[in-house]
Image (tube, rainbow over all chains, first blue to last red; front, side, top):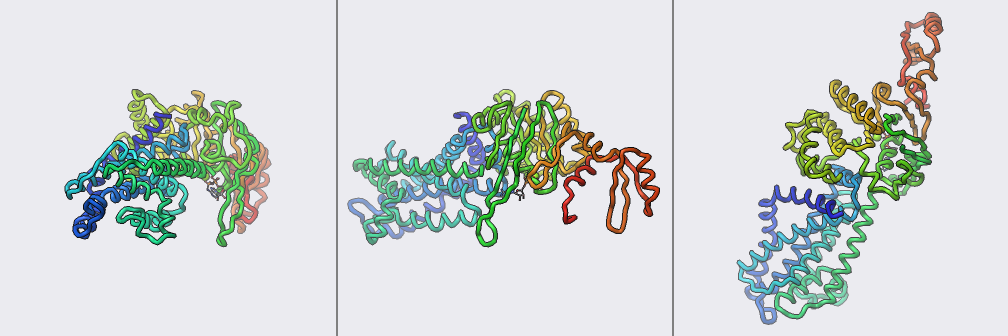
Length: 245
Length: 288
Ligand SMILES: Nc1ncnc2c1ncn2[C@@H]1O[C@H](COP(=O)(O)OP(=O)(O)OP(=O)(O)O)[C@@H](O)[C@H]1O
Ligand SMILES: [Mg+2]
């Protein structure tokens, strides 16, 4: 089982390693723009609570970026499944499906963490100050796991790349902006706020922001994220099984 | 020994009005394959050969029916059975983000080959299919036939004792095809069970110990290639008429010659072959 997870991870690592410089460079673009536009440009005139807007902003960008990167790490599975059919190699292999899922998720988490590291460096360069702890990294990993699972499920369930990009447009993009990333959810009208506050990304944003300013960890939010991770895993397992139908 | 009993596969397919219809691809198929046998699955396009193989290799769950490997069911002992299986799929399915060598290594790792054996074995297999110089290339840069050779090499890396080959020699040049035939024979001689499909009937005739002919998901006939020819009549008379090519089969050359002599058209007398049997048995009513 462990060796199978390593094999699945190894494959993604080989592919990532070959493109590492390109990967790092391209992953810098979006967060850099957010930091410049909202943090540096817009944010210089905004004061939120005690700190500066950029200190408020960075955890939000960390959350939405790790979501996007880990989700998009696994969407290529869709073409591998429909077009190249290379998933067949795993299906005929003497390997448990969970080994495949875990290996893929680990690879996505790695990508998510690499790009998060890049943002942290950028943020510090932009003059942000924050407190990073083990729990902070733990929450980040949990967030990566959840959205890697969403990517896994979508890639194995959608019938085309077109449908897959709709998940991006209708689910991930709105979440990127609304889930407490750029402003607090209290600014939203009630009925939207309630929905938004149920979403995992909102919990991640608030957890990261809380830890960054050294306030006590909201463990009930961690529990919510764990619940999402478990549900995501079960859905992923189901989607894999559907390949055998 | 591999036994399949009452195997059925139904697909749910969406038609134009977005309604689901049930399509039966394999219909109550039962057969047995012995260890070391070369077993051919023959049938026209869409007969259900690939679907049958994919159920046997556990890529796909049957709608109903049983698959037993030496008495063990595919559900209960899936992992142990998969360890023994090698598959040459009908469709080329390389990982296009990995090089040829990495594709081979992925396969070796997935089949739990010890690290110290992997490299040598991969080199040997690539050498056998004459693709050693492609190790560092991406699979998409290979020619069609080279890709198919690579599929065969990959399937053999982990020394499977049961080999499924779905149209293994499609697109191969005659020399390579003969080489693959020799390989299949020597594998079987060493105890490997080979289950193959092909549209080259002469290939099945040359290789297979037994042949199953399937059509529309059902088993129509199962026998040795020789027995199929016997059944038809050993001698074939073949001639062209305005309605197209015609055949007639006879038990002796003498009877055939008498018949041919009475024809208005000039006729060709030859030994009957498996292809004759195949066409007789799977003849489509509408005449294509
Ligand atoms: N995934 C699928 N979904 C729906 N129908 C399918 C699917 N796979 C196969 N079929 C149908 O099942 C039937 C059998 O297909 P199969 O691929 O097993 O045929 P085959 O004997 O291998 O044909 P060929 O010689 O062309 O390879 C066909 O009618 C095909 O359309
Ligand atoms: Mg087929």
